[in-house]
Image (cartoon, rainbow, N blue to C red; front, side, top):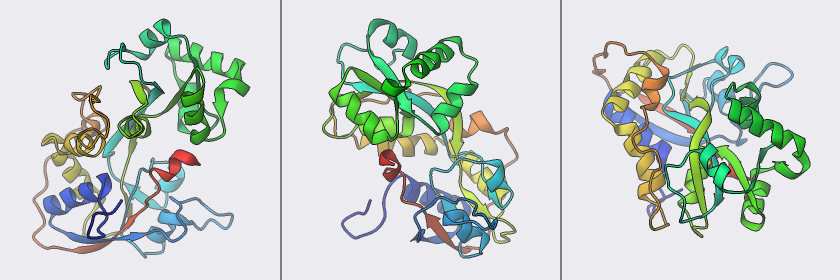
Length: 286
């Protein structure tokens, strides 16, 4: 989104501002021309954001991007700046505690549960060892034509028009639940425990991925990463009475990385071209 001056604002620009202050660099933002995160083509070249990094057309990519083995061969990933879990989005019910667990909610609330028929949620369900979640997944598979959707948009339409609840990444669900028409709420965070990371061009000499990692840990230690999430999801909520259900959750970066000695701040101020993929909320309706 843009402010009244036309400048890009939001969680990721704010994160880059914090990193810039901590590491002492300036940056410029640009769009990815083809609008893709980055997928490997048949000829082993890459499109999207990853492609721009491999072609030395950008230094850092900032987006809600998961680390994969294939991508790690051509770019470097930082420690996660935001840990992502699943959440259940359903019609607003003022009798439900914001701290209720998924299992407790489903035991007291008769509703059909579904999710997108592909992607990280499905992968996490298939690999979970939690007995309750495994049974929930089996129930969804048994009635897949009624529970699994082809798009997130379809799932949200079912939530609003049917006795149906939809599982999706908490970053998306909690954003929707804090925006008009204020008819949705989220239940719990569960299932997956994966992180969004920045991607760094390999062999970048002005700043290393390790220095970005140390900076992210410093920001986490100061509470800045949690503060940014609260600011752009809950503090800017358009829905009165909506609060962060897990405001004091264990830190995102600390959950993924062991502590290291802090590096000295850089004396110089390198300038970077950052690639910002503005697909975060477009992904809601793929």
